[in-house]
Amino acid sequence: MRKTSAIIQVDRLVKRFGDLAAVDDVSFTVEAGEIFAFLGPNGAGKSTTIKMLITLLAPTSGTATVDGHDIKRQAAEVRRAIGYVPQIISVDGTLTAYENLMLMARLYDIPRTERKDRVREMLVFLNLEGHTDALVRTFSGGMIRKMEVGQAMLHRPQALLLDEPTTGLDPVARQNVWEHLFDL
Image (tube, rainbow, N blue to C red; front, side, top):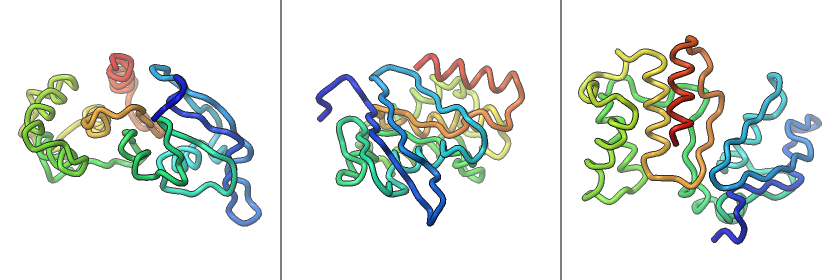
């Protein structure tokens, strides 16, 4: 369990790919309830840092904890504590909004007795209740991004990590996604 109010603690994190230091001696703390953003040009190591925090990449050196769990030694606990929205589209366009969220409810091992209620609550929160039975491939870019955020939040994670969540969205859709994130 977490001993401080920090939900994410990163200390001197390094990730090397051969001679290339993709992440070089990064340290930061994110407090519970805080919004934190990485800003920088392409190739600055933002996505690589996120991939280490979500346990998809092992750091070369340094340490990091998420909700008090070490990313190297307690990867399963870290994954249970986070929600993640990748850069690339992660919803299934051949499924409906309801089916996408129900699939995630199963993958996150949400108890069967809670799944339908959680999915309905999420559709309402996302203002997508009128699109429950629509195929996601018919959604606008903003609606798809909202679905991805909904999938990442369904299991009520302690930390939500988003990798360029508004890339490719028009200004109105971008604003809509940010409004939903600030509502959290």
